[in-house]
Length: 218
Image (cartoon, rainbow, N blue to C red; front, side, top):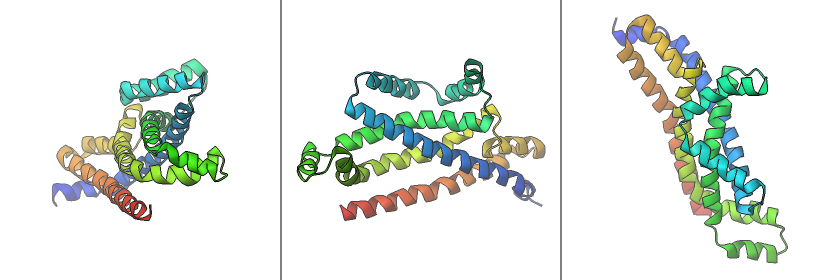
């Protein structure tokens, strides 16, 4: 029996980690994009009191290591708030806040790249600003935002491995445990790398396809 076959005997053990990696990534993607869009709209609207806080949020989370953020959310936040938080929730929240700071800049740049005359034309046609944003600005901005959004989503899947540091039993933590059991670290990490590739490659191709399709329609 080859060393890779020995490792693959523990496939159900790795599968549990894969499922949790996908779940953490999906939650962080949804949370990060929601936070990012909200922060981007606040900064574009230039709300007097809230805008400086939005800028501080973006600068802080973009300028500090995500690993430090995850550890702080898991260990310090419960002490400050008195609210117990699971490792999964802490990891998802930490990744969402981190990703949101990057998504906000992507969304803001994409929206501001659309000519101001598009908004003025929509308002002249009787739309309100919300309708103009939803029907005119965002469809055009989305074509320009998709490539960096795709890159950020792929990075987020890979960064999900960092939640292993706070004991979330995702793929990387399960892989480390399996390596210590089988003493086949090279084989385990090779399989783990291939699994991450299998998770991110369809995402990359899907974003490229969507970008080409939207670009052809606009």
